[in-house]
Length: 298
Image (cartoon, rainbow, N blue to C red):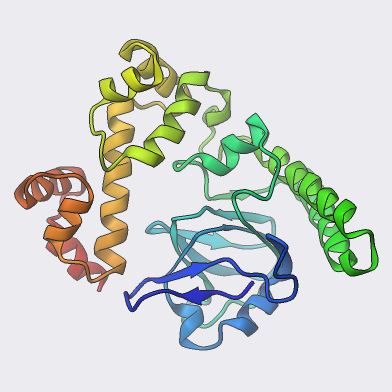
């Protein structure tokens, strides 16, 4: 995977490209390989990817960041970065690349088979970013990723089409294992929710900048507002309106912290009719004005 910079914004936008197998939308490598590809200041930059990034830590410790939340990495940590999220790769307290023995899997959203359970893992914008696995779960993931790595390494020596399909199915197996992990906060995982929430997730990711009212989503999906709210609360503990506002706030934070786009332009991009309305919304949600938040992250 070659990470291609796009634009001059402080956040580095990176698109997927496998340098060894350009026609394959998956790559399995080590964390050390990733460090070698992103030397010095490039490694320390904040990135925003258009592909999935899974990491299973075997040995070593470090501190990563995903969407403004620090993510400690130690033996048994499973880290999942989704397309569109801003993140910083694990470092030491001094800011140097962490000395991790870890398996990294990079894949595009269209590579794994589209199964209901795997889609709930890959498509949920509010899904967990990390788990600290118990020993039995770690052993299962270690074995599954080792098998994936073996097939990936042997692709050139095997029947290519069959091996590609096997890689897709092995990756689906990894995602299904993630789907049945307990939620890190101890609450019921989102995949236990009813169908309205799962459809809402997909529509929210497409339309959060254009649709701001829960009843608009309910109408578009063909459910009553009561049914949609009940489904959202079962899945997350929050109403649909809360999730809409949270998604808009998250995107605002990403743009304020990691681009130099003017606040007025961010306001317009997120569907606000006036910058003052955006400022009031953001201040109410975060306790900071957009300018104060940007200054604190600079």
